Amino acid sequence: MQHLEGVTRPQQYRALSLSTLTFTTCFAVWTIFSIIGIKIKQDLGLNETQFGILVATPILTGSISRIFLGIWTEQFGGHRVFSVLMLVTAACVFLLSYVESYAMFLVAALGVGLAGGSFIVGIAYTSYWFEKDKQGTALGIFGAGNAGAAVTNFGAPFLLLALGWERTAVVYAVVLAAVAVGFWVFASEDPLTRARRRGQGAQATSARAQLEPLRHLRVWRFALYYFFVFGAFVALASYLPRYYVGAYGVSIAVAGSLAALYTLPASVFRALGGWMSDRCGARAVMYLTFIASLVCLFLLSYPETRYVVQGKEGEIVFTLAMPLWGVVLLTVLLGFFMSLGKAAVFKHIPVYYPENVGSVGGLVGMIGGLGGFFLPILFGIVLDLTGIWTSSYMVIFVLVAISLIWMHTAIRRMERRSVPELGEERYRYLPEIQEPAKEHARRNGPRP
Image (cartoon, rainbow, N blue to C red; front, side, top):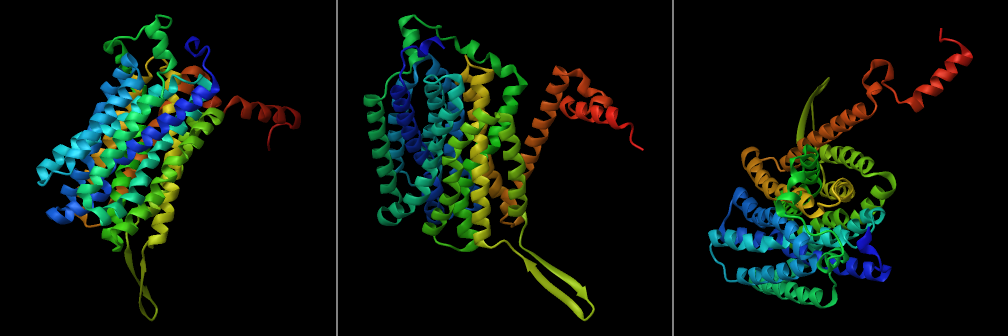
């Protein structure tokens, strides 16, 4: 990677630290409606579906914007795009404090959602600072900025109670603007963009060329993985405070704290997922993520159920219900495995598409973010239709099952193309397993 010549470790670590801090702030802003939305719901008398739409609307903008923000980052550099994006978003968050009607809340939420587009800007910016064998770990550390959701879930309830939701929005706007100025002053342009501007590296490709890989089915498969590991993460981060308030009757402050227990491991362990992807392979990490998540979601999906069993002396009645501490524990575990998966998905992209990290990552990030838009709405609709609080976990369970099946099928198909003998009945098992068995049979004779 010629553009990294002369780049020192301190420069790499500085860029990583600043981009991670910046993304953490943006993510905290992006999920602000998970807390202030509860108060807005009470003030406006919204039903579950309307609340789901309000919470999900910022996710829509943050998701769709990732496509063109990724392209702009490759063309103009992450330093410029990151700084301008934060300043524009800060203005939108400030204007939120003047909104009064539900329709205008939805419009304002679209502007607030631009904060979510910062992810792909930071992914491209960070990846250009590191060698390929270090990108998984670096991107995992950067992705730990998802902890901004935990910052909001922990801190916003107290700001809400002390200042009201209007002034809470003002505080968020001021902090975001300050971080934007700090990033512009202290961060440097990535080495690849500098090389392009000096004419020493490959020139930035056109938008059409950057979008060319999107014709590959593999890209859309990666996007489905991210629809779960990131989209469902954002959806639950926004939905869990409402779930705890409605299903267990806790206060907003307690609900926010319990939701933060989910969002924190779902964010900070992304660095571990990046390291594991570098060491063990992203594919192995994805298998671990999907299988463990299915177990957690099955237990979370089981609704409170009353059983009547006919005993010899009459009916025996008992109830199965997940206690609050059980839900919190399982969501923490679920968040941990989702965090590993988020890093593993983006480990694939610089490897398969090293020249199109912005555009391919933008699409994958957009589809993943759309999960954060559609799932809260779907949660509200399913809850209104069924009246079952755990129905949200049922929806995610189906999503994970489909992702796992598609991934395994695609991997088996690739293995058969690489080793055609694997498709034959007599070569169903791998050679390293088969050869010792043949040697054992040769020495000891056929089995009776």
